[in-house]
Length: 216
Image (cartoon, rainbow, N blue to C red):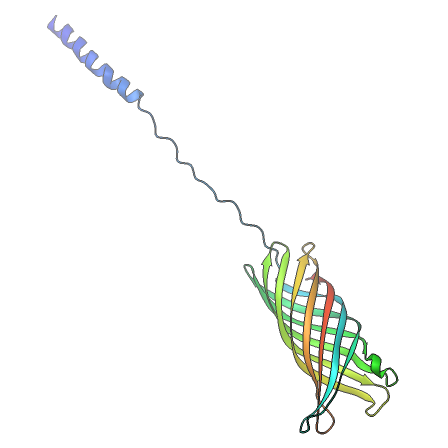
């Protein structure tokens, strides 16, 4: 009888412990919050090339070096067509590279119509530094420009070379992985390389270009 009562007592004592373990509430599983993905940035790296149409204007002035005398300025304007080629490097949203561009088309001086003179071609060597955001690329431009000024009659017929610093800004928009379009503003501070003796010939030229290109 004592053994039976002892067994009952032991069984009753073990029941609460068994049920206590079965009713333990497991801690909730930890949840990881994933931050939203950042907006995608287009890939502008690599070689590219394209064509452009530019609407240019400027003026030309003759300034005597020793005497306080000048002729001009005489304004000019016109439309030029051309092409460009370059290469971009990209690190995240930062884009930088080099570009060579060529434009041709007469920028005539209305006051000199009888002499038939003005700029005929312009070559630009540019360094570009930009910031990419989604499909847009904003760039700043610095470089060196060379222009050919023609004169078919008058005192100095022929072609005269001009050169000087260039600077500007641009914006490109990527249509897809290959094609892009853009707009560029460029200002050039040109000076004649072989001016008449005793004179300095200056000609600021600026233009706005509409561009379309392809990446390789």
